[in-house]
Length: 373
Image (cartoon, rainbow, N blue to C red; front, side, top):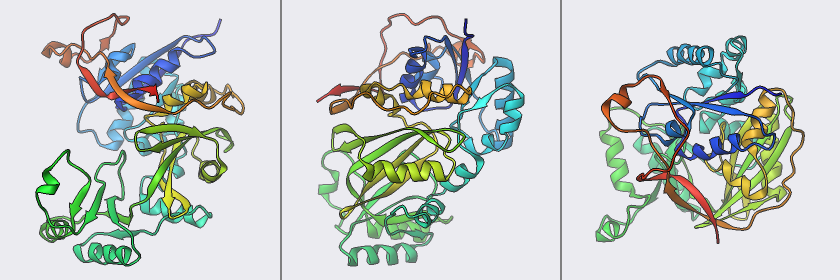
């Protein structure tokens, strides 16, 4: 009889409650126990786990590595899926292996390349993957020059932090003066150039932004599963056009994604995003972690989280071809349980959770389900 597998997810996204669900419903019928840690006591991943801890705040990367090694030893973790401080953790892969824990994360070199978007664009462009024109800016003058160059070629300019994830800090530049038009409806990504330049001129610290043209849809996120031998086992594109979502195996998207995953050591689960620059697909971003929407591949008959855990344990699942491509769908939010919010529960350092039972809960917007269109 196969032993149970103990998996740890640290400070991960709320959507990964679905990642956890798929691990438990694995096609190998293997027992899986999940440990989760987070800094937010109301994260639904804590309630979805079998055991959970609140993470200490204020740890340095080195301090967090020590905390993580202690968690792995005490909890008997077989597979660790790190998001927070991923770079520091993979630098100590040998220490985790000595503790009996496999890291479901890419190589140290890969995380170094892709934690900075400018470095990533330079590296990926050098191996022949198309990238959009881009400028790295730190001052108001540099921003103004980049925006003028883009607008001269007929593009809308946008910017985002050179290091970051999840669309945080993304803005689109407009020259339209601020008016009531900008106060109607919901807040959008547009920001007036004069306001940004003024903010930069008054800032007491430099920024580090990437300025580039606003790329067009469709957006295609290619979920890849790559082995430590640098061979891709699974690659499926998830398409996004407005509200509509779908799937693709078109080589326009998969071929460059495979080149990146295999060429840069993006072992295990990664997510490589593309958009259109004119008539050409170009790289948008590379995530060295499982995407929040990875569970959507279940609509194609694929359980990617479990295949990744198998691979991390040395049980190679081989090349995985989706048996079918699911129909187009939309993403909607739904309720997920959270832990009791009484102060004593928040202070509890070692939360052991009972099997879930039906409860009345508030909706958690980040925990999304999929519905066919």
